[in-house]
Length: 436
Image (tube, rainbow, N blue to C red):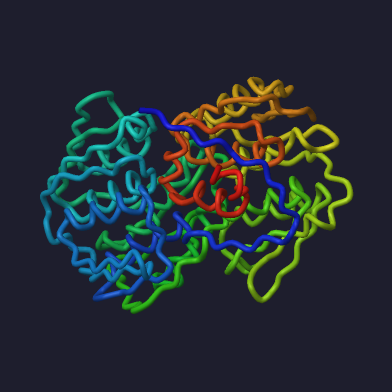
């Protein structure tokens, strides 16, 4: 049965300080890198959500020794130097794109016989570019429904692969999967990238984390060579707070005219979504680093204007910017986001559909792979979320300003930020009205 959340109109003007969960991108990479290690590693600040639990359940099904403490936000995992304790298993990656791409390559390189399943949402997302490479290298992949999609059976017994060229246009996760697991091949692996995001933010996170875990790579022949046989003995690793989740709160600063601080977020974060703060600055809302974390000074925003920005490198914040754009004094143009059609939902269509239902002038820009949003006053609307966590969280923002937005299926945010709407209520719901 579908549920709904009516977004409370925010009346407070005092500063807001919040804590957000750990980064999904960093958590799921850390889980895989720890599994590849030689011995135990304790991960701290772990995100516990649908996506990370999908990775954890798969690692458990593969026989890895895990000690999970959700209250303390820690996971202790005993790495097995790239060997899989149970080389035959049934796995379900649910809706986690990182689990789907990272684990598929890991299993193919390590060898074994695996039945791979996923949610209905994940079954729609493309896997063909990755599966095609693995098949050419000797893996047997039997798709059981649509070709090039989950579910499938993966059988592997040593792959003949020394170099791979990966198209990053649809998803950079394909490239990250090969980078992190290339060390499993005896002779290592050269990973070359083509497409629109060869130097994307998530590729940079992967490379940075590999360095942190002690894995080396060399730039060679226009790509990266990862030597085989490497293992890290890192005993502890701290996961950064999720900048993507923090940006929903940072967007509240100019929207509501308040100061917003997110604990633990600082300018040295490796996460690409930190660029969203530069967009807010260009729109007239400055920020500064504080001992607690970065603070966006909405109280100092005198002219909240629109922006023209290419968001290819931090496209997860497209929905966030789109949701506050109607309240700016001038139009907002977001470009370079063609790839977001292939994510949890067709996000370009979803954004335009929901803004138009609010009565906002929003149109697609086909040549620029983007959208244009003109200022307006959002009408009372029940926002459809398309089982997309970022649509649910971002489109709560107009409701904080107007009090006339209801979110359908708010529980879809459990993918990355399961207490997001509880936190909204805690921050902005008038308790005296709620108790009547």
